[in-house]
Image 1 (cartoon, chains in turn blue, red):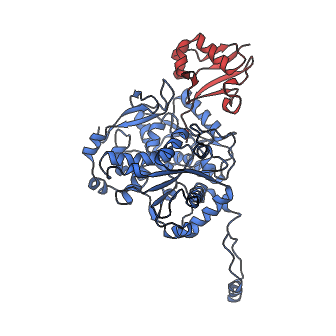
Image 2 (spheres, rainbow over the protein chains, first blue to last red; image 1 turned 135 degrees about the vertical axis):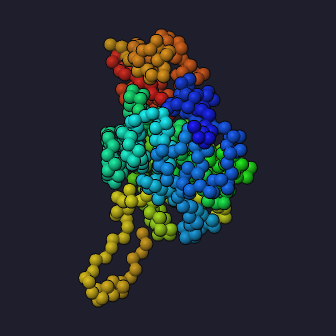
Image 3 (spheres, rainbow over the protein chains, first blue to last red; image 1 turned 30 degrees about the vertical axis):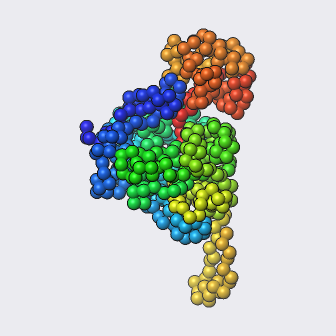
Length: 421
Length: 90
């Protein structure tokens, strides 16, 4: 075994009971979620900034802080996405320093889910699974299908039947068993949990979830390294199941624990969560001071990728937001579309609907005075707009059609410029 | 015909390996109390100081009781109560 395995086991986040590394996502005593435990002292002795900087720029340069026994066998090129200094969007929002972590260009399926899937499927192979799968709102389906195909694993993928066509086609192309379920994501997820228990397959966000979720930390590792081994003051993250926001913060904390960033850095980061108003269980819990979220039975938003009515990590996400001094907000469908366009027109980034949610929520939090205008902000963009084109089809300006003549061209120049939507 | 409670695999150590336990009850609360009476070992898995543990979702005929009347949800003969671990997805 190569000397990169520093994950010592699994631990219940509720009662602290320890388990050996295995495909299990809940504590058998209280059903609390399990999380991977690492030997941080050993990691600290093993890695350094210089060592990491010599490795290829992808998520596996932080391999000591990921839960594989050996080398990654699925998705070895995932991650390493740009952190963009977003000056034009900063001007539009009236803030001084704004960055965008752009996972809309993650490889191979254009969302941050490639990070979690490469960990989950590499781990699935270590456990000896031949069949894998997931419950998904779309991006995860794309990623599991692609990564399972490239590694020769059989995949069963469960999605709500109302999913965007681009996300269905972007899954089917890789040849998995794709099952459209007549129900909400939560019903799909419940079915998937029952399938995992009965058939013993490696479901990435069910029994492989403790390992899978660790992949999201690499968003945080990259942000800190790209800022020059330091943390920003404010991070705005979209929330569906509520896992990503927690893992980004955990990443900052771990970098501190292993000595890669200055002591005290992670405690200064305020975390903000973004949801669509049509499915806002976590932002509602934060705003109303409720400890446990109230599930949303029938999500109703164009932002289907965030449409999880009963988020598994809702409790922990709301707690983290409160504990770090951040906040949470939600925005309407028109605001989502408007901010997808704002991001595209200021920064040249075509993000999916979830990106519109994140930008619109950021704008709202700035206007509310929750995020100060003179401190550094990082927005996390998690998916690509090419997958959710229907959302903006009626909102973008229609192109003009002309005859192939200079007269025709110059006649349109004479017309007043259309106002920006 | 009694009400059936579907026991998830990790809790079956407490029900002598049974995947389904039959009870007679008019509410989910009563049904779970009856389950605990029949199989006392399951109490600490389901409840913490009298409250249902947060990571256990209870369904009556495929409907989450949080959308119904929580533990006060009425059940009748032939209904199926399912206990499902909630930590998945996302």
